[in-house]
Length: 300
Image (cartoon, rainbow, N blue to C red; front, side, top):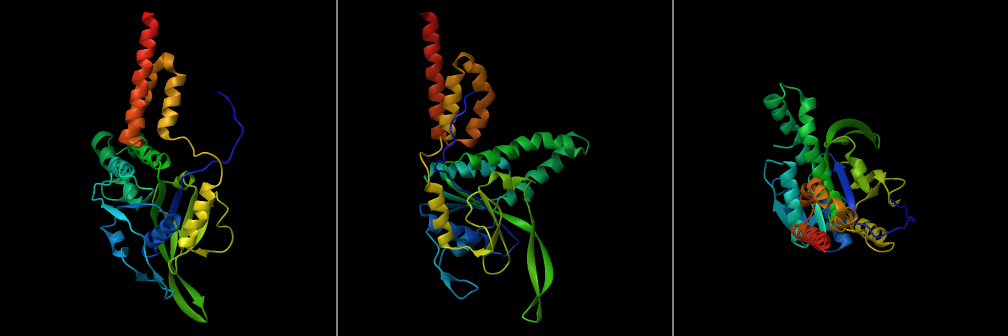
């Protein structure tokens, strides 16, 4: 173990956008992605809803938003962690710069998602004991989060939030509005993101429930292309890019060359789940090369 001087490095975006149904999560994600620039992939678990925004549309304030070009992958149930990981890896293999996951709620509470799997496993194997079932599902959910965190792409993940209505005063008149509540994902998921923006129902205004960038302090701000430009400038500030998952894996193999087999058995499966095929091939080739060098040294 060795400490190093902390340095600000380039990073990849991990942005969460939460809000109730109809609050504009998909459009907001496309706005941010357009401002960032690059090729955009959308993993769509919402019955092709993202494709509805593939042409100019008029916003509530009367302005017109022209969306960026983007490609979609319509993902049908079951929304298991493994299928979500497969979709992320497909976007990586396609060479996309930005991946919008719309939405990650499907992996948690959608058809075939974690909550349904826990219910099914607890009844089938543990006599209704959901605590024991979570011991089987949590590592699979964790692998999905790791796939987002370690991806070489910028990730924008939308999450539905439970909806509550409230009556407010607006210019002397009573008005019923939808309020976003807790996001429909596992507790603590917000800690995995660089920034989490919570949308109110009207106008694409967002407040930050978590923000490492310092860009969203103060009053709610409207999401726009400029939001993506500002985020990209923040991400690009610093030195060299962070090492990839493959680089970190190779460093670990080299540091444990004397226990190569044990290190490989312990980590290979999780590496394969979060890396692209090319990355995993590179790690495998390095493992084989280390093994060959070790065997040659033993013969000598």
